[in-house]
Image (cartoon, rainbow, N blue to C red; front, side, top):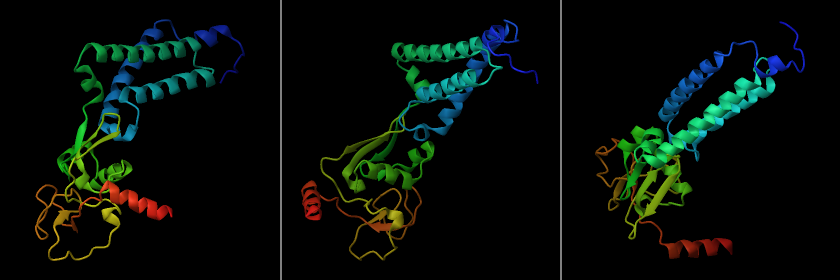
Length: 238
């Protein structure tokens, strides 16, 4: 390996590659950007948290381009500048496409997924989004939901965030606090309404759930009213 000559401006700016290599860099950036976008769509919004798919990819691409240009002497600055410019230009083009064409955002980021409808978790949607029922329970608890009967509908947005819309009149449903998976299995009282321990569907205690096939049952309960919850919190504070 030849020793690095400090402040060799030809190596620093252009390197040893021919000028046509700049066109190859453009093709490489485009191909890797499209391929990584496809892979991130496969991972799903849950794994990239609050960032949109394009924002997440922008952070990865810029981090690599900027870091390599700063650290490695065999990466010319002109090549790093071109990569950074192309990545940001593609992000701006995608933003323009989203603002000009209504369906373009759906192509780039996908669509929101409905997780809950009228107190029941939609297991078919969970499978499509590759989310386990226990993960959906956790998402709802993080939004302050104590019982599925409180929820009219809930959606997982393309960013991975969950939007919850509570019902005006809560009904009996699956208690989420404490988590169902942490409870000891107890026989249901004879007069108790049984609900599926996964999706919350009110069903027969003996037959498998018709929606998710789960055979575990818990006693359905009415969600606590806001007034009783506040009274309990005041009692605990004292």
